[in-house]
Length: 189
Image 1 (cartoon, rainbow, N blue to C red):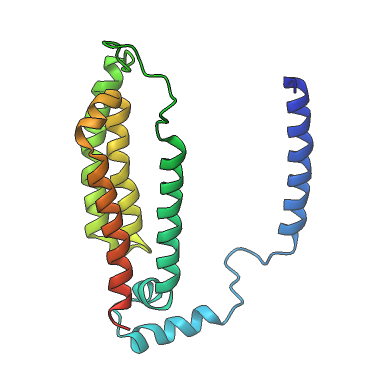
Image 2: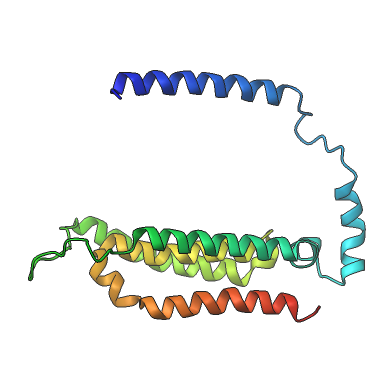
């Protein structure tokens, strides 16, 4: 397929999508015009009924507990699938002895990423420790903290990244995390 054909297909698909989006959004109520009774009911009952400190925690950990467990296992399965797709195959060619997979990196990138990594870790810990203040704060903290190894990978390439990670340890930690989340949820039942 030529580039001109790809642009035409994209333009046609984009136009159709835009028209469908406008048609679907046309009948929506105005912003802030909440017409459903469920939010009002749960705000009035959640703290009293579930003995929670706030409505967000009651919804995330009690009403939606099994849903959150399902979301976690979907994420776990997606990560496992990506790891399976990107693993090194026995038939993959090996680099010659003495050759390095390391690409030459800019010293500016390396100098900028070190403070960014430190800031990312501190901010992730802050969000994790104050997660009760925002909906799903612990989830955001996990995502922020997960970017720190990615920043190290960007600045130092695979050699430094492999030094700070152990594949077998990561597999054990992931399995323990997924299993403990399920056990914590099932123990009260």
